[in-house]
Length: 317
Image (tube, rainbow, N blue to C red; front, side, top):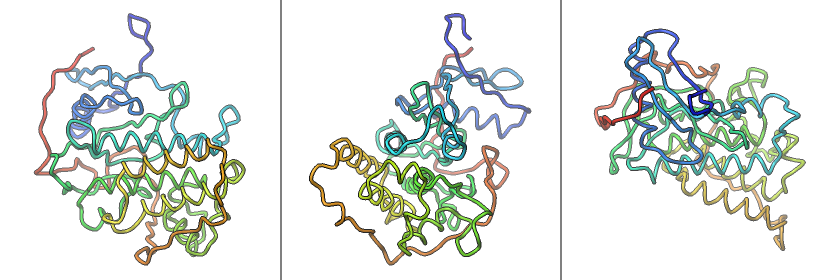
C-alpha cells in the first residue's frame, strides 16, 4: 500500500541477473508508451537498487489460465464472459500493433499473461520480451524466445517475428477458451496430438469440433456463434503468417459476434453456417512442456539490429 492508500503490485527480480535487468528496463520503456484499459498499468520503477523493482496497478483476480483450467465456482467462465475476454485481449493487441506511438510486438501472449481485474476485465501483462519496431518495419530477427504451445511455427523456422506471430499466439488462447484444454498436454494420445493447436485443427477438419468444446461453451453459445469463433481461431493458426488476419480484423470480427449474441439471434438461419476449410493447413506438433513465465528458449536475451533504442524519463519510487 502506498502513502496515498493505493494498493499496488511490486515485481522484483529474485536474483541479480543482467538479462533480467535488461527485461525490466525494456518493460519500463514499452509500458511507458502504452495507455489502454486492457493493458496492465506501470505506475513506477526503481532500477538503481541491487534488485530492480517495478510497481504496477494491483490486479486482484489472478490470470486467465487459472479460470480456464481450474474449476472456479465464484466466477464461472460462461460463453458470454469468454467472448468478452477474447475481444478485450484482441483489442489490446490491435492497439499495440496499430495504434501505439510505435508498433509493439508482445512476443509472449499466453493465458498466464492475461490478468483479470476486480471486474474480471482482461489486462495484458508481462512485456519483458516485447519490442518496439519502426512503423515501416515488417519483422524482427531474434533468437527464438517464447512459450511452447503458443509459439508461431513460422517464427520457429525462420527466427523472424512479425505481428502475425502474436496473432498465432492469440489463436491458441482463443482455442483454450473454446476447449478448456491446455496448449500442450501429454494426456492426449499421439494420434490426437500433444499440441492443442494441431488437435483443434484436426478436429475441425474431421467435423469433430463440438466433441472437444468446453461444457460451458456448448451450454451458453449458439452453434452459429461457436462456429464463427472456431473459424476465426483456425485462421489465426494458419501456418502461413500472410494468411492470418490482423489483430484489428480479429477484434472487428469478435465485436460483430458479440453484437450478434446481444441481439438474441434475431432472424439468422444458423443452419447455414458451416466450417471454413483451407488447403494450406497441415498439422504442426510441438512435443514439449510450457516454459511458463521463465526465460526464453535460448536462455538469453533476444537481439535485433532494428530495434528502437528509447530512453524516457519516468517516475521512480
